[in-house]
Amino acid sequence: MGEVPLIRVTSHSRIHVVVIFGGESAEHDVSCVTAAHVLRALDPARYDVTTIAISRAGHWMLADSAMAALARGRDALPDRLEATGRASSLGEVMAATSHDASATVVLPLLHGPMGEDGTMQGLLDLAHVAYVGAGVLGSAVSMDKATTKRVLAAEGIAQPRFVALREDDLADASRVAQAVQQLGLPVFVKPANMGSSVGVAKAKTVDEAIAAAHAALAYDEWVLVEEAVTGREIEVAVLGNREPRASVAGEIIPGREFYDYEDKYIGDGAQLLVPAPLSDAESTTVRNMALRVFRAVRAEGMARVDFFYEERRSDGSPGRGFLCNEINTIPGFTPISMYPKLWQASGLAYPTLIDELIALALERNTRRAKFRNTHR
Image (cartoon, rainbow, N blue to C red):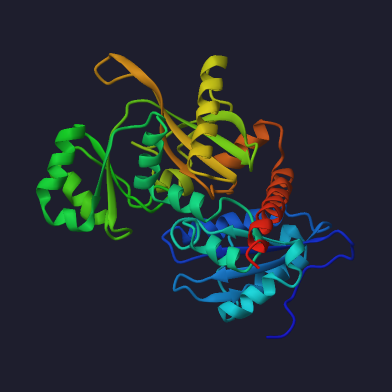
């Protein structure tokens, strides 16, 4: 393959950072935007950088154009990277990540399936390479929302009511109708393994729910039907391994009927309130809940935990308080993403946040290495 091009500055304490972006999921475009802004935040005086792109078809490439732009200076980077480059086998790419495995950290900026769900994490574990974010178990549990909800239920963490249905169940339309009867209208219908609100629909009738469930099958064989909660949308960022800490809470006021893909990444109608207008007691409660969720799913490194704050039900009766909606183990790092905004409001600047995530990845890899060595 030849020598892998790196951005180098002579130093005895430099870390090789491998940024992987693109991917096969429906969140490919989000990943390309996230990667551009993460590259811009990496300090060229501290890190050597290799960029690896994965096409929508699953082809791995060395993204030379991204590295060439980075070599000209961070300001030369576009707002969105293109998942293109020199075609390379998976074996060659993995060799590029491990020229000095003890000082290499992978940033798998792959949202959704085939990247955020434990598949990439398992590959990197096999290669004995440090990587940012949750491990195999935490990634897989958090990506599959049906499994997340079952874990949270076992831990006694409050959440909206839900019904999980498999593709085979949807052959009988009455199964969706039964779920709607159990939960009440309206309901939200979504694929269990997807993020960024891809495939999510709000159904106000049984027929709409049935149609939404079949549409969700384009993304996953498991579909969630959830009660629609009348409440505020609150998010908390979590950072750490064995001793995670929570950021200030933020609030999202959607610009559309709900916080969908267009509201998150295309339009500018949504309002992000950081910090959220909560009392000290409310803020403490939701931050502690975020840490409980983070630990329950065995997350590490980073995650954004999303809540509904149901102060009152739609009929005016007292609400249930904070209800966990979901956890995202590779949250977006785009300019309008909540995760970096929440940490900035908590006193941690974007580049410093990246530095800490890299340090956490190295710490965990060192800690986990002792378990690999015991079997030799």
